Image (cartoon, rainbow, N blue to C red):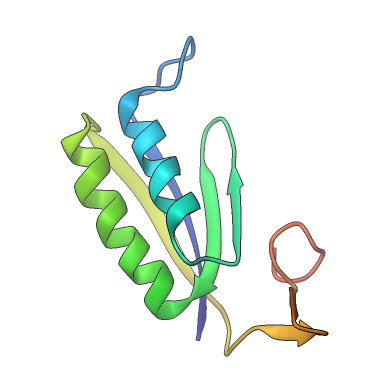
Length: 99
């Protein structure tokens, strides 16, 4: 099963990224996920169920420890498994498929 997680951490700081936001980004970028899209007010990541759920657990622990007072997240099932073409995952975020 493939999952997509969308999340934001608060409080916001429009002048510079707060520590909890940097930690959250570090977690998803270091996880074994197929696609990560970091935005100014939220981040989306997609991958296999185990990888996404493990990343979410680490993300919650580390971002709260780094000062987040709220973490909003949504997890969606986006498919049974990756569709590949020549060993490359297709349908990832930003490729016109599932995202």
